[in-house]
Length: 313
Ligand SMILES: C[S@@+](CC[C@H](N)C(=O)[O-])C[C@H]1O[C@@H](n2cnc3c(N)ncnc32)[C@H](O)[C@@H]1O
Image (spheres, protein in one colour):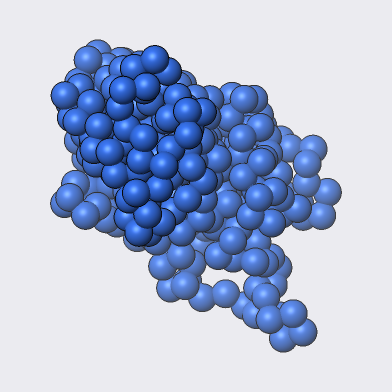
């Protein structure tokens, strides 16, 4: 809605929300109520509780103009998170821009499985620092917003993380998210094709050879010819490099699994997110190499096989 249209509509919080919800519903925006609330919270710099305890609060012309311009962009298909510039993941708020994939709730299973596997493996504790000895070394391949790298660095204060991405614009956002959550000093950001930059890395001066305890990844896994099946928000606004894994979607997994095998130390753990319908094919690739053991697949909350984990012999 334009500024002029805003003249004869909503001048208070309740009316603005009602109007925005109707507009978004008419445009068949999923979760229209939530989207309207988030956009108004963002516009006013208020939380949801404030919106519902101040329904009569008035919207000045500037706020109304800003809010209805965001509502119009949402109705035209832009994801709410790119309009507000943020998304929560693992209880932490991440900055997101169209340079990065919006972190998905199902990707939190990668963190869960990784922490479970590390816990089950057991770690040696340095009695003076209380941390593992030597510190855990982790890689996150295709870091995007940095959600996996930052969540793991946050959970594991004695870890050192290498986060790679092919996109320099994505790495810039990931760096900002690491700084925001106070873990930038423990994450190395590397522009690389998968783990290519780390296989013969000049980054590591303290440990040789470069051997990881944990490698995680949520690689691009949508098949090119499935682009039309994606929601418009995703297809038209999220970066192609974050979505498409090649003609069948499986293409990047084989290289990632091979490189991970070369970089993980003894009992090193590999945890990867699986595209819809790809569990069988990815398990097959891992099973071909006898040095992988303890292969498990974890379903997401919708019952879809979502995360494969394996351990290096
Ligand atoms: C599905 S997104 C995942 C982003 C983030 N880890 C998450 O879970 O939200 C995949 C990421 O991998 C990056 N990427 C794509 N191809 C790559 C490659 N060959 N090497 C490294 N990164 C790549 C993309 O730029 C994108 O940021």
